[in-house]
Length: 150
Ligand SMILES: [Zn+2]
Image (cartoon, rainbow, N blue to C red; front, side):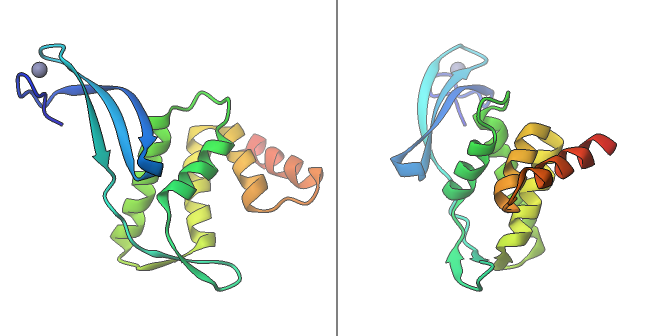
């Protein structure tokens, strides 16, 4: 993203938030060269593929939905918006690189769990508990034990 004053490509993001119902990202940026501050509205590239649910229903992939599910798992954890954003971009790229147009919701969930595992163990267990639909606390404990033995 170019600075509007000096044209430098070197800008840093001060703040990001979703706007336009999650269809674009509002970013406060600061030029590293001249310190000019400006706001951009960046449309996320529309990334189209379909998700096949467990009950075989097919629905369009929604970045917003994935974002919310990860954000819920990351509540009160030291994880920034940018980290989640970057994580989803990596997931999308993995799917894109595989050349698939449809992805099983289970595979997407596994990819998210893998990423969270490397990022934050608490968020990982929280996400796993929702995603794997833990029925009782013992399953929760098993997952935590598994983390400990690694
Ligand atoms: Zn500048």
